[in-house]
Image (cartoon, rainbow, N blue to C red; front, side):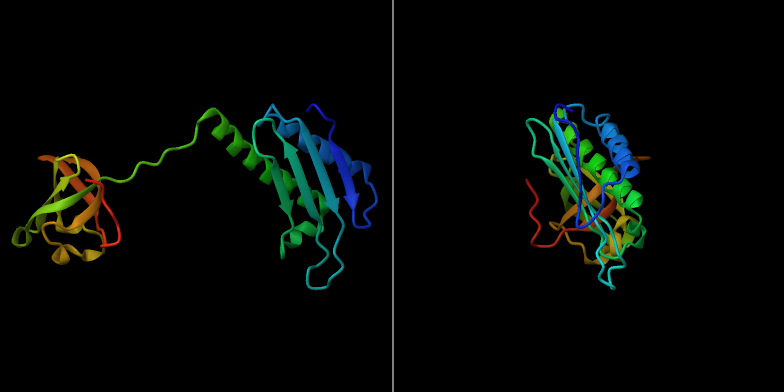
Length: 191
């Protein structure tokens, strides 16, 4: 870190050297997940004395990373009685900070998962007496599907021209569709 770690104790909490050491240890571990941290401020806020809250500690962490939005963690769980222990509250807050930093780093280096849309197509032919049908994908490939591959037992409701999404697989006789889902009218399929 370019700027030294700043730890504050708020809401009537007295500074605690052992807790401060724990916070410093957790802050050093953050640099394993994001070596470009420029500053980190941790605030430990004392127990609330409201009876229905059980006297929980709150931890606020503000981390500055150049070129990215700041990471802010504000752990104030409403009913997690484990947070009656300040060390547990600190541990959980830093775990959340690590997850956010990892997400920031993945975005920074372009490692975001791109989830592909499942294959889409239209029912081209139905053979209800033989319990199968054919789907033509948007790319023009034909897929066989059996009655049991249709989700929610909607085989008898399918008609030629209906839009579907499905999972591709290779069968004994060529491309096969499984997990066939009928798509409602509000869902648009790209041609």
